[in-house]
Image (tube, rainbow, N blue to C red; front, side, top):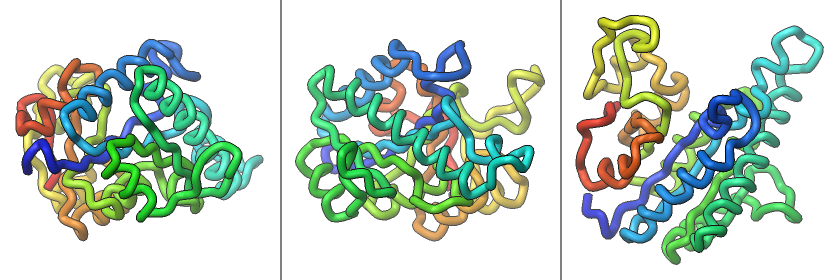
Length: 238
């Protein structure tokens, strides 16, 4: 893959936007992410983005005690991703990056409806496309939505931007002897229940031969380094 013809999709968790508060949107983090994305655009990379909604509401958590139905909780989560998508669009356009927000649920006053051909055209014109509202269906995570959108737009890789520098055999925050796994097969991730993404997302990535790169979003310049072929600070599922 050459940097000039690369198209990537980057998945950010909603919690990543919350910073130390654990909820809401930290505008400093939002600005940092926007600057990292701008660096990619300035280098001719076509960028799609999916952001979770866990900093506002998680569908599964909302439905945990049975008061809210799972389907309603998931729709609440989808709307949370739209809130984050609007924030990301504003942050990117604030620094001069042309951006389009597309949603899987129609809301014309806020965003375009998702149309894959239109999304591809935006990308070809150098615009960032933020895909919000998940897949538009309950019972599917934003991990699955990210894998689906990456496959639909023909992305060369899916980067899952997290707070750690890759995948470990156990939680590095709890175990000092945790070992980083540089490369993992799709089957290993599924069989060993390595929580890179949920099983549906990994299976979809496998079916489409889509590499999943797990990397630290807080490492300045890391996204560009990965696309340039430097995998020293990440893990790859392929």
